[in-house]
Each structure stands twice: as C-alpha cells, then as structure tokens.
Amino acid sequence: QPRVFDERFPKKVLYVNDVSASGTQWHGVFVADTGGEGGSRVTLADSAIVIAEPKQGKLELHLKGGTTHEFSREDPNHYSLTSFGQSDWPIEVSGLGSAQPRQRSIPEQSMKELMTETRLGSREASVELDTRLAFPIACLVFALVAVPLGAQPRRGGRAAGSLLAVVLIAAYYLLLILGAGLAREGKISPAAGIWMANGILTGLGIALLPRMEQFRGESRWLRPLGHLSRRIRLARRRKAQARARAAAAQAANGERSAQEMPVPSSGSFPRLMDLYSLRKFFFYFGLLLAIFVFLFEAFTFFELLDDIGRRRIAFVTVAEYFGYLTPYLLYNLAPLAGLVAVLVTLGIMSKNNEIVAIKASGISLFRVAVPLLLAGLAVAGTLLVLDDTYLPYANQRQDALHNQIKGRPPQTYTHPQRWIFGEKSKIYNYDVFYPEQNMFGGLSVLELDPADFHLRRRIFATRARWSEAQQVW
Image (cartoon, rainbow, N blue to C red):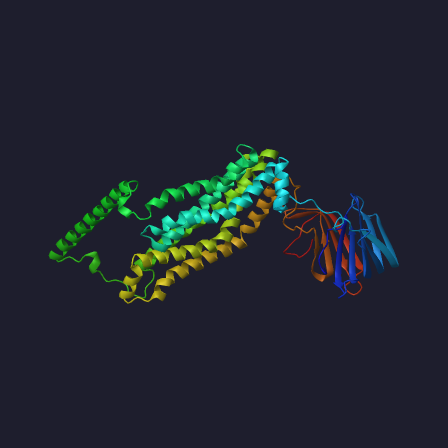
C-alpha cells in the first residue's frame, strides 16, 4: 500500500511513495533496517521492480538509482554513504504468507473441533461449546418470560416494558458472564456455569405463566406495595386539600395567592412542563447509561479474570483500568441511552394521557419536543468536549493498562507508528516518547528530495523537544 509504513517484514520497515497499477513497479522506495541495536541503516531508491517468490517465502526488490546510509547511534559522527545504480534486495516474507497454517484458537474453531477438544478434556473448549448451544436457546427462554410479563397490565405501558426488557437482558448477560467465569476457573462444571442463566430465566417464566389470567390486584406478593401506594396517594390528597383551604382563606381576606400571580406567556422557556420532561428524560438516560456501562464492564472483567489471576495483577491496577475504560464506554453508549430514554419518556407521558392534556391546552407537540431536543444537544456537546479533552488521554491509559494485564510489552501510545512521514518530505523516527516532559528519545529526522527521493539531510539527537512557539527542535 503506498504512503504507508509497513512493519510486517522481519527487522525491516518499508515505505513506498507510489505503486503502479500492476503492483510490480514501485517509485520512491524507503527501506530501514531495525534489527541493529547500536547501528541503523536506511536505503532509498528512485524506483524498484518487485519479484515475488511465494514458494520460497521471499520478496526480491530490484532497486534502481539508490543510496544506502549507515550510521551509529552510539557514535553519531560515524557515517557511511554508498551509492548504487542497481541493486537486488531479498526480503523474507515467510512469516506473512500462509505457508504454515496457524493453529486456530478456541473461539475460532468449529463445532466439530470443539467437540473433539472437549472429549480430550479441554475446559475452555467445553465452555465455548456450551456457550454456542445456550445462546440460541436464550431466544426461546426470553419468549417464555416475555409472554406472562407482556400479558400483565402495567402503568408505564410500552415504556415500562422496554425498560423491563433492558433489565432482563442485562441480568441474563451478567449471569452468563458470571457462570462462564466460574466454569473457566474450575469452580463449577461448564454445563452448570453456562446454562445457569437459561435455567433461572426458564424457572421465572414457568412461575409467571399461571399468573397470566389473574388480575393485578390478586397478587399477594405485591399487596404490601399496594397498601403503601394508597397511603402515599391519600397523603398527597390531604396536602392538596389543605393548600386549597389555605388559598380560599387568603382569597376571603383579599390576598392574592401564588396561583393568581401573572404567569409567563406560552412561548417562554423553561416552563413547568419543560422541567418535568427534562427530569424524566435525564432520569431514564442516567439509569439506562449506567446499566449499559455496568453490563459492558462486567463482561470485560470476566473476560480478563484469567489474566488477572495468572499474572497476579494488583487490584489498584484493575480498578484504574476500568476507571479509564468508563469514559470510552460513556462516549459510545450515550447515543443509544439517549434514544431509549426519549422513547421511554414520551411513552410514559402518552400512557398517562399527559400528551392528550397538552394538546387540549393548545400547546403544539413541536413545543413538547423542544426540551428533549435541547437535552440531546447538551449530551452531544458534552460528548464533543469529552472527545476533545479527556478521552484521548483516557484511551491511551486504558490501552496501556490493558496490555499490562494481558502481559504484553509496553508501547508508546501517543504515536503508535514510530515512523512518521511529515510535511516537506521529512521522515521522523524515534525510540521512545515521554508525554510528561514532551520529549523524544533517539530522534532521527530524514529530509528527502521529492524529485528523486534521495536523502538531503539527516538530524539525530539522543533527546529532543519541539518548541511550538519557535517552530524548531
């Protein structure tokens, strides 16, 4: 691919400025050897003809009009320059091809392969096999639970049903993840761990089926809640009657009550109706967003549980990782939570005939949508600020901590590609970057001639810092 640093080759970095339609002729070739510890070698050529030998696992480059620059990082004054008209360069590509088929991991294996691994005693294969069988069966289990729940009349209507569906799905996934984690640790059998979620929901559905034809008031379990609800409504009614009597007494004495004070015009903002809609929206938005984030973090935790136990990762490190992961999840899940929150808010208002009352008062439905649209703009603005300020740093930190938990070597995350093609045909390469000091270690700047792709000047420094004000290193 042209104009992309290719680091797939063993101990080499390849950059091609332009590629012909056939792919066999390259123009502006840059090859850097990265295998030497103290030395470095860079070869630049005006053009190259590519000869592929996949059977031998080689890629031969016939370079034309090039130069080779060799220098030592320990002694920068030691510099060697070699020019050539034509030269052949073999590059090993055996690691890139499919000469040796890669052994597939457990999630990549077929059902037949998983059955074979299970018979051989592989616990991981048994967990994966049971998961593939239990997950499709969950469709039938959810239907068994949804039928009695949908048949029961509910004050919230469709909105409450949508919220209940989200809660059930979250509970199912948590049970599935918990069971899979316990099964992988060997605390319970794979069948018990994976099928636990389906079993619990099936039992819930069977218990609810006989109650489909019962009235809402016949529930003995919910009877105390009904008494409490009636007492709350009675207390509210008594308070309203007391306020009415107080207002009547003030009117008899010639005083003006708060209800008689001038009210803002219908076009003012915010009105009591707007505050009511916003309160409902942000309540369901926060609730749904918390459920979504908790679900994803629980899934990630049980996925990393084996690595945490195997490498004895400290609790502080794990907590720090999830702390930096949370902004990323909030950023990605906020639009979905906002969509469902709007549907739930309007659904509840429609179920309670509040929309009908608003229309009967002569208020347009477009006016009803104004606070929800403004709430959406507020959420969008918050996400933009988060993306421009804290989120990049949080993503770098959570990637670094994720690699630490996985046992991978540390990397530089400010610029994952250590080779950068900058402006004015300059190539930058560095060994390490310290974001706290804004300092590069082992920085090389190669200034190229765009006409023939030859090296004009090379700058090397063991330490370098870029001055934005002076535009110099």
